[in-house]
Length: 158
Ligand SMILES: NC(=O)c1ccc[n+]([C@@H]2O[C@H](COP(=O)([O-])OP(=O)(O)OC[C@H]3O[C@@H](n4cnc5c(N)ncnc54)[C@H](OP(=O)(O)O)[C@@H]3O)[C@@H](O)[C@H]2O)c1
Image (cartoon, rainbow, N blue to C red):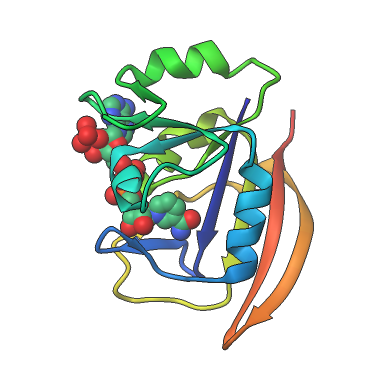
């Protein structure tokens, strides 16, 4: 089973110049607590944006080439999806834009930190999705510096 986890702006902004747009401590904490002990799947560009391997999680990186330093490098995404989609094990898809787009149709859950702010210089976006196909649970609301945000879990209806 795949779950997407992301922090997005009002226009679904995800990143710019290979980096994150928002830096919210409570969001980072939620991300860490939610993904700890699980497999995490990411694109090569997101992998390169990290300071290193995310500890206590199995770091799986998608690339057409072999990715050194990752726990596992995946080049055949279709095969990886079909091997894991029906499993009970929750695999967290942690970005970026390209990988969210490819995994969205296969994801049961979306954990989205929705930030009440926009950034016109963003160059990477979370894909559009049909909210009527999901039930929505509020996990947490918060405010940090000037940013207000809500963390939701969207669960795809059967
Ligand atoms: N706000 C958030 O929650 C969040 C989370 C994560 C990332 N981000 C941001 O998102 C941006 C990066 O996203 P991105 O869309 O540019 O890149 P990305 O999705 O992280 O990585 C794209 C790369 O993944 C590999 N890939 C993807 N699909 C593949 C497939 N089907 N087969 C083989 N390889 C595949 C390719 O690597 P190769 O070129 O090596 O083949 C491709 O260039 C950054 O700004 C980052 O900070 C934001």
